[in-house]
Amino acid sequence: MNQRTQALQQLQSDTFDVLILGGGATGLGIAVDAVTRGYRTALVDAGDFAQATSSRATKLVHGGVRYLASGQISLVYEALHERAAMLRNAPHLVQPLPFVTPAYRWFDLPYYGTGLKLYDVLSGKATMGPTSIFGHDKTLALLPNIARKNLKGSIVYYDGQFDDARFSLALARTAVDHGATVANYVRCVSFEKASGKITGAVLRDEETGNTFRVNAKVIVNATGIFTDEVRHLDNPSDAPLLNVSRGTHIVVPPTVLGRDYAIMVPKTEDGRVIFAIPWLGKVVIGTTDLAAPKPEIEPGHQDDEIDYILHHINPYLQHTITRADILSVFSGLRPLITGPGASTARLSREHHIERSPSGLLTIAGGKWTTYRRMAQDLVDFAIKHEMLPAAACRTEKLPLRGAPLKAGDPHDPLSRYGTDRAAVEALVTADASLGAKLDEALPFIQAEAVYAAREEMARTVEDVLSRRMRALLLDAKAAVRSAPKVAELLARELGHDAEWQMEQVSAFRELAARYYLPS
Image 1 (cartoon, rainbow, N blue to C red):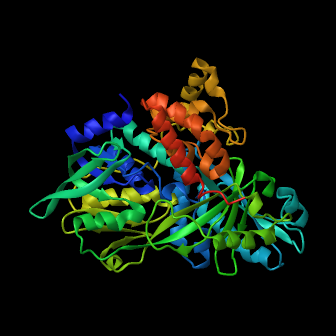
Image 2 (cartoon, one colour; image 1 turned 60 degrees about the horizontal axis):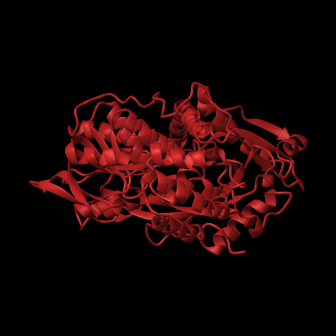
Image 3 (cartoon, helix red, strand yellow; image 1 turned 90 degrees about the horizontal axis):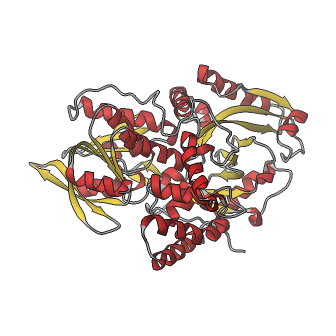
């Protein structure tokens, strides 16, 4: 029996203390927090884990350098504390990364240097590396492809980077390891109430269409950009809480930077921060910030967003990049708490927690780095309002699934599995053909697709190539070339026929066409 089938049986037979709707960073963090406090916990997502916003971040674990300029020191301090917890609890998925902030005017060195040294001081013992000020020659040694004309030097500081979708999966598997029931492709379609109070939810298995009821003392709406849809299942007349904005990134070859140092452009002409970050053998550059018309998993991008990114990064590069260099484009939507419903929500730091008259708890806002604190705040809120019996939070020093005793080599493609890499390697030992790469342009091997189906609840080609592996984000055309083999391997594992394989490959090709630019 596979994990998802087992979870569906448990959902239909058990009664839960906490049912979480939404399998992104926040919902999964709540599941880990709740189950490790001893509550009977379940989590479902209408799609795959981290399918929307939580797999489309800029891949940074950070305190928020931009908050320093506005004097929001407490926000920076808390995020730096949480950054340290993420590194400590998942060293296979979070690594320190040096950032170069180039200076082309002499006064930029002391100006940005002072702010970034304060950033380092605020991190205290949790520092990822010292902030330093370097001259022209040392800066070129760090980043050979940085623009040289009028270069005075640079400030180098450290922050964290991570694999967001893999981190989400580690949270899901950690929750399961501690006894939670977790399932993807299960949608909440309605709530059941007694005397005006929510007593359970009606869920639908999106693969079969079957519906069933789940009883839970506390139901949490942690659905990110779809928060208002779930709120309206509870009360259709609720004022909206969210608007959404789109952030777009481009992915280019590693030669664009040439070294394992990132570039941070501290202030664009419209006041944004732009990053160029080495990630999984490629370079991610972003991001934009545009109002989006509605919540959707695949928001796409506009041509002028590509132009915007190229316009703002090229002045910092010795060799200009063009559209022809772009291997993939990915976009995600940010949930912004700006609607009229926000006036009735409870604000806690950067996120909001709301309790409806029926008892539905909604949490929205925040960012990846503070996911754990958001989860703690939500469960503490439920305890404070006597929805759950008191129990202490245990997640601050809780190793996540696969966490090794020490960090592995981030250049090793299997290091992101941590202690689970042995299980992937065992598949290759049993069948040497699974050691073959899916595509020469990608670092992933066939065994990873088999492992994703058996152990990581992957159900579709997209699940594998977009989130279990990051092929779609790294090189969209290489991902398309990989799709038939992944479909074949998944079909063998999940018991599907040749028609299913063809449908999967067709659907993935259609999706991937949104991730690469026309030739």
